[in-house]
View 1 (cartoon, rainbow, N blue to C red):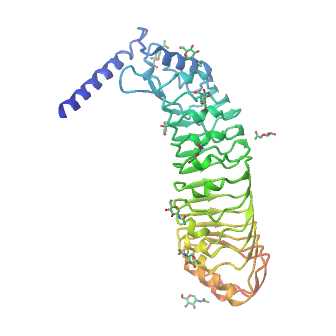
View 2: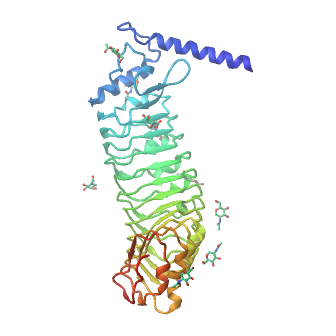
View 3: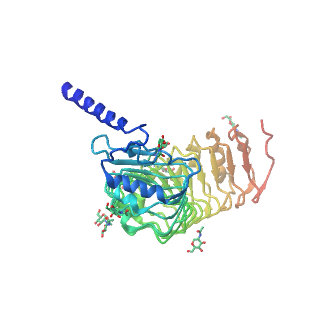
Length: 393
Ligand SMILES: *[C@@H]1O[C@H](CO)[C@@H](O)[C@H](O)[C@H]1NC(C)=O
Ligand SMILES: *[C@@H]1O[C@H](CO)[C@@H](O)[C@H](O)[C@H]1NC(C)=O
Ligand SMILES: *[C@@H]1O[C@H](CO)[C@@H](O)[C@H](O)[C@H]1NC(C)=O
Ligand SMILES: *[C@@H]1O[C@H](CO)[C@@H](O)[C@H](O)[C@H]1NC(C)=O
Ligand SMILES: *[C@@H]1O[C@H](CO)[C@@H](O)[C@H](O)[C@H]1NC(C)=O
Ligand SMILES: *[C@@H]1O[C@H](CO)[C@@H](O)[C@H](O)[C@H]1NC(C)=O
Ligand SMILES: *[C@@H]1O[C@H](CO)[C@@H](O)[C@H](O)[C@H]1NC(C)=O
Ligand SMILES: *[C@@H]1O[C@H](CO)[C@@H](O)[C@H](O)[C@H]1NC(C)=O
Ligand SMILES: *[C@@H]1O[C@H](CO)[C@@H](O)[C@H](O)[C@H]1NC(C)=O
């Protein structure tokens, strides 16, 4: 076993030496073992019209392409391109379709440049695991053929100008873990096949023009940790069947979601850290079970139609630092309805509390003086309150 380990090391050294041979030998022609990969990269370079920092200056045929800046190759002969990483190099131009000939490519990172034009046809690249084309100016649609990249784990196309729909067959990407299509101009629905992405842990689709309801099955995706859908026109409701034990970040602000939150909501998302439901059409009571999501740090339920009393169970959230309930129709009156305020004194990290623009009435209880000493902002305006606030200590 030890022997074969040494042998492998030796073989690697020889390969390294061969690679080195190709380097720094001036105009001596270098043997490029895979002319298809070489041609594909040269075509890619042709597509780059602006390279202000000379990021591609090493890309010439007297240097083996495995030594070109941003190119990584397989560790064994015939050295084939396995990764292309030119993130943040201020490149502009189009991404040529020649990349489809880099058949062993597994990582493609051209993020944070100024590439324009359409997405290259990457559908044939079966080994692709990572596509980072975010923060460019790519337009056109996301081709359905992209769902052929069955080994895809990370797909980030955020901050471009992509339009059209999310490929209906996206559910075929059964290894997908990270998906970010935020800040584009995507329309249509979240495809019904979406819940088939059982490994998905991060789903970011914010700031598009997605509409329709969120597929029911999405609320049972057990690996989802981040579901960021804010700033779309999604409608429908959160079903009682919700069960997302790993969900930490739920961002649904600025949509048209509504109806009541299921009474078991807090029990169904026990790991939640941040809950953003602001600027929607939610109505009915704030479920008392929210107090069971004991890691919650941020709650934004502002600008909805929540009614009834504020549940005292929120006082169980000892890590809470931001609670925004403003612009709803929440009520107080008798002393029992103020119990929540007393309970919130348990939230020692509370920095910001807004109850602005509701239907709170009566005398503000003294227990307001017991709210977190670290409190920086307290908004109580636009209610029907009276009484005297204690001086901050
Ligand atoms: C090719 O690139 C190498 C490394 O950057 C450089 O030293 C060499 O001058 C270049 N050759 C040509 C012909 O541009
Ligand atoms: C590309 O390189 C940058 C550093 O230059 C690194 O942070 C990033 O993770 C790399 N991308 C991939 C896909 O490995
Ligand atoms: C891929 O390679 C083949 C053969 O080398 C070539 O004919 C074809 O034009 C290449 N495809 C692209 C999109 O560059
Ligand atoms: C992708 O898969 C579709 C079937 O879903 C097939 O028709 C198409 O030829 C494939 N495209 C590529 C580029 O492999
Ligand atoms: C999604 O998964 C279900 C079963 O789990 C299967 O019947 C269906 O064909 C899958 N759809 C797609 C588009 O992958
Ligand atoms: C989004 O697409 C619509 C047409 O569907 C177009 O009017 C609008 O300008 C686009 N917005 C952006 C930011 O590209
Ligand atoms: C929630 O999902 C887990 C699997 O992720 C399952 O074990 C559990 O029974 C489900 N709970 C409910 C109430 O359906
Ligand atoms: C969740 O909270 C509700 C209301 O505060 C409570 O009655 C219930 O027992 C809690 N459930 C669990 C599982 O802690
Ligand atoms: C404030 O908290 C202290 C200590 O927990 C308690 O003794 C006191 O009664 C509280 N004051 C009000 C007005 O709730």
